[in-house]
Length: 184
Image (tube, rainbow, N blue to C red; front, side, top):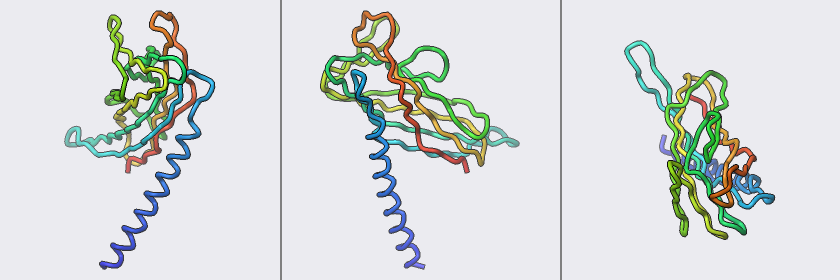
């Protein structure tokens, strides 16, 4: 039995290494060269857990965690520090793709990076990224779905501005998918 454990752990280790290589390749494909910024998905994780709502029904929650690095190329850029799945303009726009109906339990975004500032204008918070610097956004989305079904989160747009006084947002429109997660 001890040999089986060693063999299984070595297989898991090899599969983990292969997964990291594939994620790095995918991140390089997502870079956009036409806009004022470069976007790379650094880390992409997901897991699920069953939660007992009451005695009769159980709910399944899937947690998605994406680390998105945005680098300003030649100009400073301003990205709204918000995330939304509806029609409301936000920094990060996403949607859920799955094999059964689902709903968003919660969504939040955090930011970090050297030389990065948070600027508040009215009620909107922007992340100011200086030229040549990077900001890492941590997107956490919790999805309520059905047991045995498959779901993933797809970031469809990132809104940003080159100047705070601009009326309209500019768009980064390449899709950034999360890992596919089966709630089973």
